[in-house]
Structure formats: structure tokens, C-alpha cells
Amino acid sequence: MLVSRFAARALARQTTARTILATTSRPTVYTATANFPNQQNFFSSQASDDDSADEVHPDDAPTAIAKQRQRIVVAVGGNALQRRGERLTIENMLKAAADMAPTITQLARDHELVLTHGNGPQVGELALERSAATLDVLGAESMGQIGFVLAQALASAGCCAVPILTQVVVDDSSSNEAFSNPTKFVGPIYGAMEAQALAQSLGWTVKPDGEYFRRVVPSPAPLEILQLDAVKALLETTEPNARNPVLPIACGGGGVPVARIPSNPSTLQGVEAVIDKDACGAKLSTEIQADGYIILTDGGGIWENFGKPNAREMSKVTPEYLLGTKAGKAFPGSMGPKIQAAVDFVTDPNAKPGAWAAIGDLKDAARILSGQEGTLVTTEVSTPGGVVWREGKSGPTKKPTKEAHRYG
Image 1 (cartoon, rainbow, N blue to C red):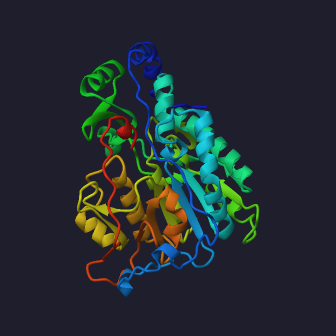
Image 2: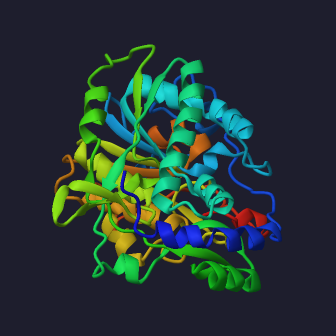
Image 3: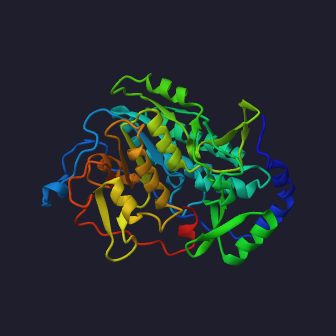
């Protein structure tokens, strides 16, 4: 198999990388704990008892997104497989996946579901351990690792998950700005001196991510999902409301980036890059004609003035409002790509008519589809200005420690 043309250079750096990383203190990783509500009345459009006393304007009332069976792509961040404060181990990933599994299984019973996932913590750890390996190979390894963990947990919950090692074609030409100006954050954060040493020794490009620094790599746009027919075939195998639904897991970590050799387009080669998983999820949603695309996070929906005392969450919003206010641009390593992916899917001329996207906290998955949590991105917002604000909810605070910011 042909691998990235950068493999030889990466191999030569292996000894240096081990020397530097051996002296690097790696703090405990902080990510989202996956705790889920009772699954009964999973997608009810009615408010729960604790919300019944709230009085809201009709335009602000929760709107059930999926009252009937729909085709939905759900993107789960790589951080969902790691409990806050715990080391990134297979054992801890299995525990977190077991917490997540009942929610995903119930969703797969009620809808045609495709699951995709991030791999930031996992591929970051692999890159630190095996500096000679190229990013396409590490992406494939992390996809297999996470796919196994999710499939095992979902099988225990009564769902037949089928991980697909997905290759995604990108443009790796020298004229592609993604390679001349890399922007995708990967791996852990570093202090300024540590980042500078790694950059000089390993040939990395590092950029500020908040008050710290992280490695950045090329992140070309996904052009073609090669295993798309396999995903579609699996979707056709499950009967509605099946107790043991078949669940494709595809495009993990954005898929393995590959390029076609110009002189022989049927031949593929790996590309030293990381595709944004939210962008690839939007592409997947369009290609399979999904009704909706849900991006699950560890920080809720889309907030104005995030982390500040006057923060407020959007309940429903149009793509035009998000673009006009440059929502998420202040968070290029976290919320920014998620908002852009949601906008891209909803506005894609090839998407299914009426397509919607939603962003919300993993633990609130049920209430996102009932319209009670998270942010719905849709062209159908009647409120003047194109946004409805969620009332009576205080904003999350920014995580102040280095450990909390380790992965975006």
C-alpha cells in the first residue's frame, strides 16, 4: 500500500521525537463525562415535569425536531470517550462508551442512524507515541481503535454497530491553501518554550490556541467518501423500530485522507493531513440524503458571549444569522468548525429539502431532538433577526486550567 510521501522524513525524526517527549510532562486530560438521562419517552415533544411551569413566548417554545422516523447522522467528539480527569486508556474508553451506548442505541431504534466520531485525543496520543508514523496511518489506527470500543459497547446495549474504515479523497496539490497554511489543531497543548522546541526539532508548525500552543496540520476539504455505498447498504438492512438495529460507524476522525495519483487516478496514496470530522460529517449527511445532522459536544449549543456572565444560548437560528455574526470564529479549535459544518449542511444545494442541523451536549441528546436543549440550525425561523434565544439558562464557564484545554 502506498503511504504518504512524508513517511521517510517522519522516520528520520523518530529518535529526536522520543528524546524530547521523554522529558515532556503530560498532564491529566480533562474531557466530558458521559452521563445520560433515563431513556423512557426518549423523543417526546412535550416538556418534562420540571419545565412545565415555564411560560414562554410561542416563538420560543420547544419544537420537536424529529417527530417521525428520519435519517440522521450523529457526530460524537473524541472527548466523549474519556471521562473528565482520567487518563486516555482503553479501559477508560470502554467505560465511557458503555455510558454512551444506551443513548445511541435508542436513537438507532427510532431513526435511521449513522454514527461518526472525532479522534483528537486518540490520534494525539498515538502521534506522541509513534512519531515516525504519518497522520494518515495514525488516523486509520485511531479509527479502528475507536470503532472497536464503540462497537463493543453498543453490542452490549443491543445495537449491531459496524465500523467502516473510511477513506476520503482530498486535493493534495501544492496550490491547495490547506497545505500552505495549515490550521487544524491536533494533539495536546504546550507552553511557548516547549512548543518552540518541538517545532524546531520535528519540523512541526505550531500556532497559538488560546493562551497555549498546539501543533497544526493541513486540513483539506473532503471531496469524496469512498465507502459511501457500504454505508447506504447497511442503512437498508434494518427494519423500522428493530430491537437490534444495524448502525454504520463511518468517517471517524474525518476519515483517512487519501489522494488520487494524477497519472493514474484509480490509484490512491495517503496524505499527511487530518480532515475535520465535522466537515466530513456534513459531507456524509448530504451524500446519504440525511434529514438531519447532530453534532454532540461537551459544552451545550451555540452561545453568545460564551464563558461570560451575560452568556446566552441560541435555541433556533438561521445560517444567515450565524454567518453574519461570525459565530464561533473566536473558537477555531472547538466550536468554530462545528458551526461551519452545520451551516454548510443546511445550506448545501444538494442536501435534502428541509435539512436541519443541531448542536448540543452529549448528555442532552434526547432533549436536543425534543427541542428542549441545544441549538437547532434551520432556515425556518420566523422570529425577526433569525434567532431565538433560550430563556432561563445560565452559560457555562470557560475552563481555566491547562489540562482542561488540552484537546479541542
